[in-house]
Image 1: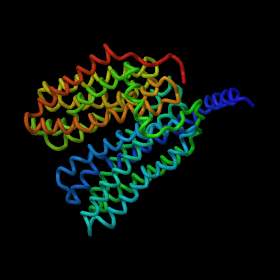
Image 2: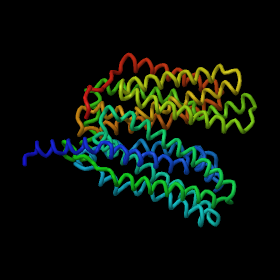
Image 3: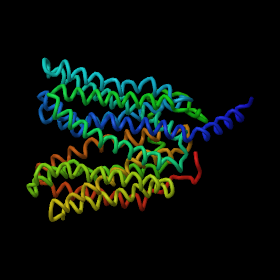
Image 4: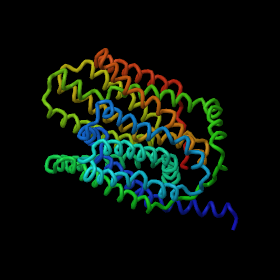
Amino acid sequence: MSSSILLADEARLARRNVRHNAVALGADFALFLVGLAFASQSTILPAFAAHLGAPNVVIGAIPAVMTLGWFLPSLFAAGHTESLARKLPFVMRFTLWERVPFLALALIAFFVATPAPAVALTALLLLLLIVTGTGGVLMPAWMDIVGRAIPTTLRGRFFGVANVLGSAGGLVGSLGTAYFLARVPAPASYGVCFLCAAFCMGLSYVALALVREPAAAATVPRQPMGAYLRRIPALLARDRNLSWFLVARAFASIGTMAGGFYTVYALRAWEAPAWWVATFTSVLLAGQIAGNLVFGFLADRAGHRLVLIAGTLIGVAGNVLALVAPSVGVFSAVFALAGVQMAAVSVSGLNVMLEFAPGAEERPTYIGLGTTLMAPVFFAAPLVAGVMADGLGFPWVFAVATAGGLISLGLFIARVHDPRRGQES
């Protein structure tokens, strides 16, 4: 049987498996998000670190370190990923290092945190680096599986619906987390949260195992790391559309640098009671859910560039509103806009990189470029915002974020062209 007949059979099989794979991959992604909600880098992990006696600098560094882990390694793993005809066995083998550490964190909370808090804190940071670093390594492979299993004009809805399910599950999980933290003495309460995270990660792993991965139409011979990385400058010089896109995304990340300070500013500026935090959280989640639903359909019909333009514009509006809001009630709308902006990135931020790739075999490299090259900006922007907030005040943070968003918006409109080729892949 000729190779062309084999490829045609694979293509027909892939089309028949679209619904099955959409459900399996969607369940994997949504359950993974729910698991992360039980070990939130914004709430649970900082609180656990504080319980262990971590200084503020360590607590504040947790999100930054996790961001580096998720984003930095991808490009360095992309060359190996491109050489694999089947990516799923590679992902299944190593994704255990994304999931098992949550079980280890539970054991640490139960048995190590009280007698040896310093050891527990060190283990916490090490395990978080393992989780996120592994995720960064596997990101190109997982996205390539999505790219081959889900047609181009369905990927927006795929990510939109999966994000909605993950957000809804995370909201339900937050109720459970509140119950555990209120009823179970610390640090055991954190151990229960980590057990719930590990359970969701286990279910996610089962869903991932059910994926019927289409074979890659072509692969790239494996190259030494140095030779592979030396290709990147020429690639960026050749693909000017991609280069401008990455610059626009970098300025867009500056446009989101104020997000971590909205709550603190609102509580201080209007001396609002603490219960407003729950309101802000609910409004943020509502914005995310609405944004994911709308942007998922918009991305499939009009392309990811338009989604990112809309998300950037909404982010600018949020920062402007933060500057001029006359009351805490009006300011709460900032969180709705922030949620919508986050949804745009969730749906299209990486999804669009699958369409930038000139061939399916190069998708891992383009996913790596969209993560690794963004890592320094994603890491530095919130830290710079923190220094600026302390030295100049929150309005300056909102103003600089507005400027970053406007520059990004201009670049998206004037320099970036939609990479979609008008055909399913």
